[in-house]
Length: 305
Image 1 (tube, rainbow, N blue to C red):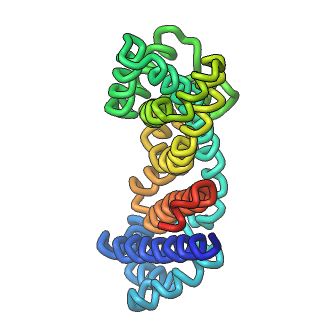
Image 2 (cartoon, rainbow, N blue to C red; image 1 turned 45 degrees about the horizontal axis):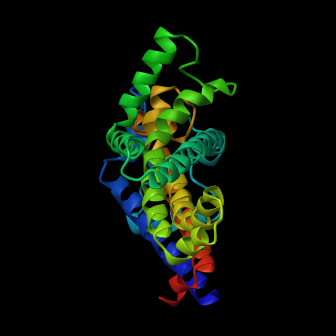
């Protein structure tokens, strides 16, 4: 187990290192960063001073080495537009994004898993067909369209829920639904297929032969064994929710990481763009690694493979 965990952690470190290289050298292709940091009345001498101050007059490989050294210490640089420490800006924006993703994951599991169980138990009935139709719609509907429809119906017409900003619990409902619909459909489909496989197994048939109540057979025997891949999907989905919150945060004016990234793109703030991409990638890789290790701990066949 220790060997498996060490290998996965080493792979994650290599992945993050490659990601940092792609992000850094990819930013070099966008043009002169000093020009993006300058204003309309910046003189040539002031422009050269900006390059010198931020080390932009040095070779790319040398700047990447210094960037990587600072990155390991938690220094993400200084914003080219606001002149603030990017790490402080990220500290303000990450909690709202984590909260929104947490609400989305909670809603997805709250409705997706029971719906998948119901579809598997009522296989080939009208309930199963409706559940599969919901899964198709949920996985194909664009997030921005879902968000706009929710705003139009619950905000503009019914006027029962707030449609922008971050405040009380009611502010989380609409963006939480918009961000969770895709993952909810994924939970439903995965739970249904996993439950169908377990329900056809010999130990479930034996439990029914013994005369156990159907409720105990489904929830104590079948769901307990079918839930492992579903929980694994949940860990990876949480990282996906963090990275997929950009559109929802923009539509609902949510002050999170995705909106910070979009604002940085508009202002061509390369340092902030790099920081948001690396942060999103770091969260995704770390969560994926943790899920893989936990899954291998639960199922020994994974680590032996």
